[in-house]
Length: 106
Figure 1 (tube, helix red, strand yellow):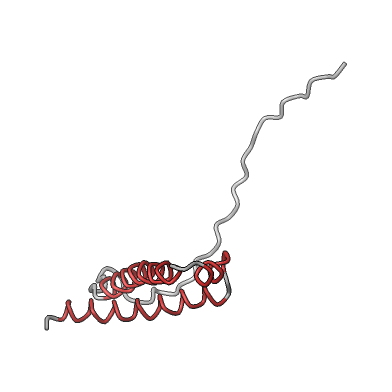
Figure 2 (cartoon, rainbow, N blue to C red; figure 1 turned 135 degrees about the horizontal axis):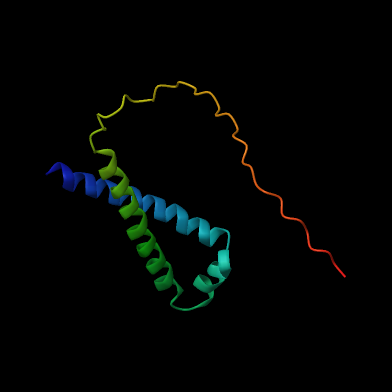
């Protein structure tokens, strides 16, 4: 199996696990009365499966995107970690402005 396909399948699995935890947490804490909706309606299980499926799509896509971005080669422009040199704070430069006399109130 090609490495990219294997990476995609593994990340779909991780996304499913994250979606399962997230959806279970939503139902357990009854966010927006979701538990009541899922248990009181006769077709509530369909809504639960739909929520789990859509969360799986979301989390699997994010997992795969992170994995692909981590595969990029590091930039060779600067050494990793930075130079860690502190620069002296800049001296304050005074800004001069002409004072305008205030209007006299009646």
